[in-house]
Structures are given as structure tokens and as C-alpha cells.
Length: 330
Image (cartoon, rainbow, N blue to C red; front, side, top):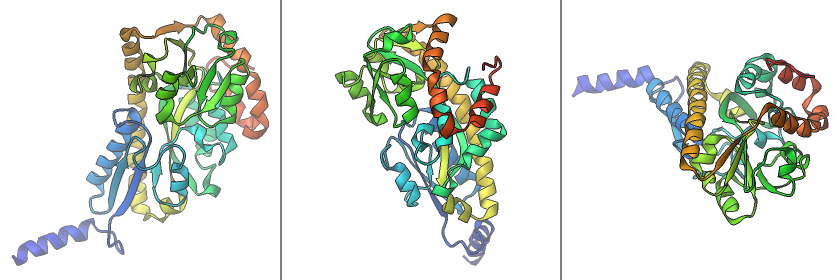
């Protein structure tokens, strides 16, 4: 029996970190289903961490608001009751006004422009913009470009007038709809389907994957393919917790996050294309494709939102975002 004990002791010695009696536990909470790109990303992170850091780091994943929901997850992160979140960027308004750049309607031409901005210096800088609030950004995760769904067809901005749209808590998104004569209601993501079904609101903005996974297309007869904004997440951790992790382990975790981010973003784009086709096949919603003139009319109607928030976001950041569009506009 002694050789076995010696062997087990050797394995423990090789996997243990000096001074670390127990594995570091990372609780990863999110509000979406496990079969979404974010949900799959959380599970991939858990698998890779436990394969590469056995005995050193343990990851617990809590999907679908089973641990914390939209309303209290950031407070839980601040209290270190949870160590990883991936909220949508709109949720960070109270911590960093600069991140509102991602909510500005029709600022980015497409997802490739968003990618270019996030990889450049201004985009990387924004990951660190909340550290005074004990929140460290680790990566941007895509969910996709947003579309407008509603109970009536919308070809021009005036078609949205009088409708009520569900939004996330965001002054920019509120202003976005005000510009086209619509009203807004802030409703948690898990309650959006019932709000649309009951008529509490008549419309919403979501990527195709959200619309399909939450069955919103079954209660929204029209979807206008606007691609007017990006619904992205920021993978964040409690700053004090993250930098308390031993450097060698943290470096390994950062490498894993890079791998997972690539996979999440690839899967998100694939899911959006697949789910758009599924919605079209279901036949419950008419997909309205805008011609260039119609899309430009929407853009011009919402463009005043850029000027409205320029002073709090920063002219330099908005200009950096515009610069990544292949066809730059003044």
C-alpha cells in the first residue's frame, strides 16, 4: 500500500500550488440557456479549466438565472458571491458611461466593424474602465447584431411610433426609441416572452439567436432586419478576486478565456444565421429586409443619439468606433 500512497502524494504535489490548500472556486453565473453561445462558452470554460488546472481551480456554472438574475448579479459580483459573469454591455452603464458606445444605434456598419473596434486600443481600454468599481473586464463575447421585432411591420422609423419596446436598463436605448416616437419598458430578459405575449410591450430588439431560443418569433409577427446595434457581453470578474489568483494560474486562465472567446464568437455568428433560417422556416414571423434607403432613414432618425451622449462617452471613443467602418461617415 505504501507505493500507492507515495504515488498519490506525488500527483498532489505536482498539481498543488504552494500555499493553496483547496482549489480556487470560480462560480460562473449567467441568465441565458445552456444551448446558447454564451451558455456553451461557460461550459467550455469549465471543461478546459478543470482539464488544465486539476486540483487548482474548480468552476461551477449556474445558467438561466438559477443563481443570480439580471437585477442582482453585479451586486453579487461586487460582494464576491460570484466570480464570473457575462452581462450584456448595457448593464454596465452605472459603472462606465464609455461603454455606452456599444449601444449607439447604427454606429457600427456590421459585426466585423465591432470586431475591429474591440481589438484596437480604445476597445481594449474599455475592458479596464470599471476597475474603480471592482469590476475587471476579461473579454468581449458576441451575441450578435440586433433586429427589431414588433406586432406591426416596420419599414421606416415612423412605423415604430406609438409602440412600446422592451429594453435593458440603458439611457441610450431609451433615447433610441424616443427618437422614433416609441416608448420603452425595462423588463428582465427572463420575462420578455410573457411581456410580448401579454401585450405589455409590442416590440423588442434582439439578435436572431435570442429571438429563436426564447420563442419570441411565435408572438412577434414581424421582424425588421435592421442590424442596428450589437448585443455583446463582457466577461467580467471581481477585480480583487481576479488579481488575488496566483500569477501562473491567472495566466493560464487568461489563455483559456482567449480560446473560449474565439469559440463563443464563432458559434454566435453561426447560431444567428441558423436561427434566422429557422424563424423563416417556422413561418410565424415575416422577416422584413430593408433596402439601403430605408436603412439610412432609420440611421438618420436615430443619429441624434450619438450627439446626445458624446459628452459622457467621449468624442474620441465615438470617432474611433466610426473609424472602423469600411465606409466611414462623418
